[in-house]
Length: 378
Image (cartoon, rainbow, N blue to C red):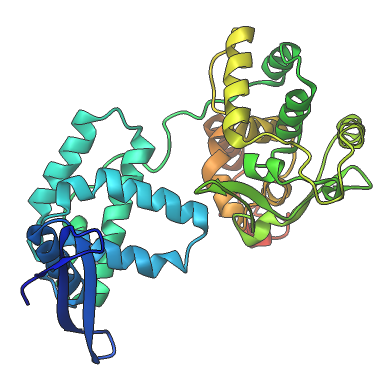
């Protein structure tokens, strides 16, 4: 239906859109929207609204995305939703928003990939995340909007799933860093990150109740700010709810610091936000003349330290809050010293101890070397 003119209480001429549509239950409803400055704006609103009700491949990518994000909002944590929305709004919609999903071909996706790779200085892992996000939206279209197939599956992947090199600090480098931190709150915070391996959001969610006897930190929450609102969210995964042991000296320092702040049991121990923590970390890193790393790399540095100490991978996985040991292995297997050399040495040992020609055989099972005994051996 065409848009209509009206005058508001101040006598200004505006436009409104009034039309009928079918909702997802099949019921016919009337939609009325006022306040448009021009006739074109009212027409565009009606066209987009009707388009979003479509359940076929003629829907515009921009309309599909709005429906997709509405569907995802109740299924995702606020921080995950915010990151997803930002990625889509800035990296997908400017290039694909005006296309019908049925017109987004593999060659168009290739051109979009080329733009992302050539025009921006994105990391390889971020490029892979962009590719995965677009593919997820197109899978959504296949499942719910009758799109014949996902064109992303007919193009090569963009970026890499893992960074080429994980940047970490040694214990000596960290100890050099902390010499230059003169602010007590930040010094205790950085020590807690390095010697516990917890995430930054978990650190900022710590309260006096989190500091338990027996030198334990009880991790139950993840502190984030979304749209200016401070939120205590559930941890990243089920395995993230855990108790983490820390050095006794750090335990005492944390208790003393919290006591000195005169905090209630449920107050946050560290009053700053993540942005402030990151800024201070970069300032002190530069002051100490150390190779720059991300603050999250203190967690990787912690794992590296545990590996060097010979801590079993199962214990490391539980400590850092991974749900599966396989996740820990996939992330940190390259840190194990002499990996390929140890394999070659082990194979040489097996080869040299193989059965002799005179038939003197001893089964591996009798020697307690049955590969099925260790579920992580594969």
